[in-house]
Amino acid sequence: MPHSPEEKKRVLARVRRLRGQVEALERALEAGADCAPVMQQIAAVRGAANGIMSEVMEAHLRETFGRPATTASERTARINEMTALVRTYLK
Image (cartoon, rainbow, N blue to C red; front, side, top):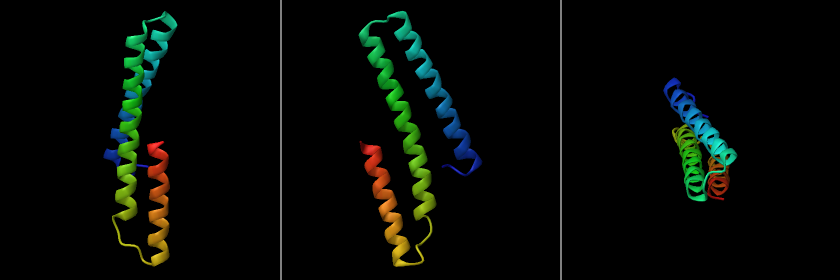
């Protein structure tokens, strides 16, 4: 989670844009739009969601690895957490 006011503001702006894109997709589907524009809108939604995930992940990486681990077990735990997060992101 972004903790600085600037990061939080930036991520919330992205979420609001994503909401608008999803609402536009819903309207297009309700109106019976052609497949090509609908697929283009779906791709835009996916790209926006990936952008949010990237920004939040970057903030988390900075927070997690921005200071040295105090023990070997802490270092291992951090690496395991990030490995699991990246695997989830890449699914």
